[in-house]
Length: 230
Image (tube, rainbow, N blue to C red):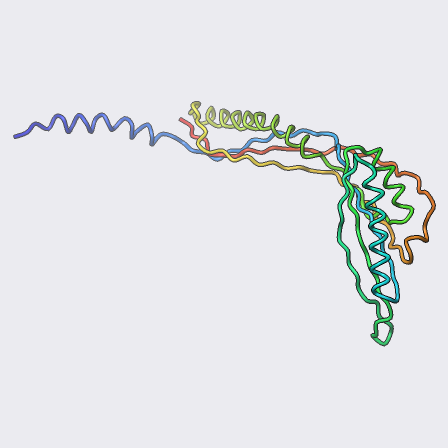
């Protein structure tokens, strides 16, 4: 008959590992870090809105106005300009028949040079209408800030895990899963303007550059994950 000791010895060696694994407690925790930073980027949307009895003449006038705006904006190297939505639609008389056409076109501006952008905005307002102004944190500053916040958020999670472990008598911890999320709480300050009808050449006076305060935004990083306590 073969002795049973090797089999019993193997079982005895496996038993402690099973007991230790069973004693582990896994908890879901989160940590957060945030910082308030200056808004260093300004975005502006301006538009032209016109009407004309002839659809082709309306489109031509609107295109010329937007082309003029693109040219004025392109002369300011520190400002990034791009086209926005352009729409035309019919207007109707009381009988439901088309009696004219209306059109609207946008130009969008973005810059970290707020003074240059304000001066350009004032210039464009001599023949465009201001729809809104918003202040944001640039991508470069946001990424740099998030990089400094990630370690802080992880330390926050570690501290919470240590507090939980101490409370249940399991101070040893090991992070088994970690998720990182970012959020950006901006402070847009919209400025709305009334619609303008008629030819874009009707307004030719120089408009004083607007004055605005960019304010601050809060950037936060949140981490969450599974922590094993023993």
